[in-house]
Length: 79
Image 1 (cartoon, helix red, strand yellow):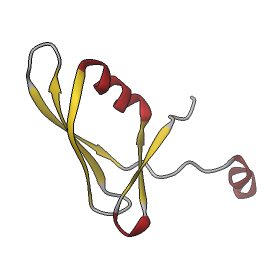
Image 2 (cartoon, rainbow, N blue to C red; image 1 turned 30 degrees about the vertical axis):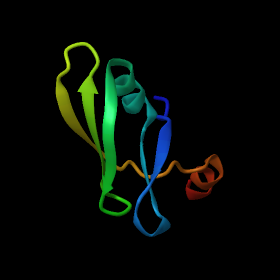
Image 3 (cartoon, rainbow, N blue to C red; image 1 turned 120 degrees about the vertical axis):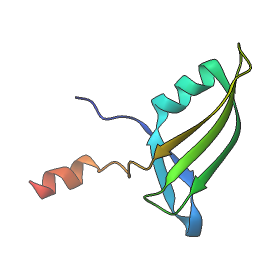
Image 4 (spheres, rainbow, N blue to C red; image 1 turned 90 degrees about the vertical axis):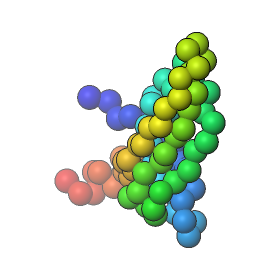
């Protein structure tokens, strides 16, 4: 199984949260993101508020932090 590509969003105190790029791209195809903000620090979640392009419906999605990817070098050292 391949790893998901992640996007880093800045959170509090120069920390980042990492969310899947595929989820963000899927929302952008069918909706317009009207507001986005981070709740909490690293380990928190990204909240997206959006408006549908076709039906003018509104929604809100919360995406949990997945953490940064480990480099191949660090994975080999652990084993």
